Length: 295
Image 1 (cartoon, rainbow, N blue to C red):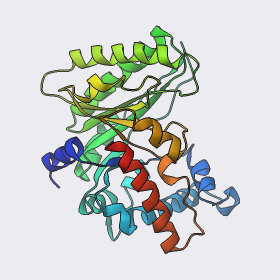
Image 2: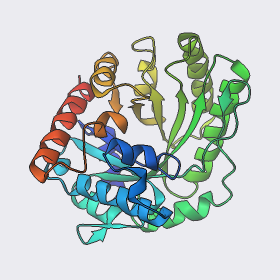
Image 3: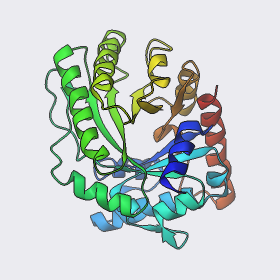
């Protein structure tokens, strides 16, 4: 797929984006959920080898290339790996799936009710290498935990500032100011965040587009205006700790948003499953998530 073909696939595809981007801190938890205990590995390289085996199994599953997955977010080590005898980005594109790269370096300590992203001086170099490998876009996450306007606006401004750096490298940034779904004041805070996002879009130069990855809003339909905004390529939803069924039920209340689930996609997969059971389990989750995305 060319860049323009990938852009059209993301803009128009009737499917969802798979989040396969668990990094160092979240990998042990992801492996534990997959049924691989921590005593299975002794080094970080062995740990990443095990998570890569899981991702390869997903990517090569017959159902993964059936058109319901339109994009996949990768961790840097996954981008640099291989699947099906090819680089992971090339293999994904061969299967009709647009590759994205997680580019943030983790979170700062909470301040003003938000956790901003850590400094990322090597962002441009990473983006340029990703573009050479055929990656279309990026994803980066900050977290908002309370309806503090100072923290919310600071987090959103940082997302747009880093997005400008990514756009300058020829990639499409997926901005992810995640709102903690357990926050008691989420309904109020999400409205403040929406205003901050709208301000960022006004300031975005004409002709440029970003993607948005947001928690499924407390108020159904809150982000409807964003899904039709000319400077927004697509609005995707994170599962945010919801189970697959709960995430799909909530997502279906928000036309125009599509899923970009990690836990919601992977929660029932196990290393001990044989190929037939693994494929059937993955396919069932994909069917639910795709149906909620196009509801």
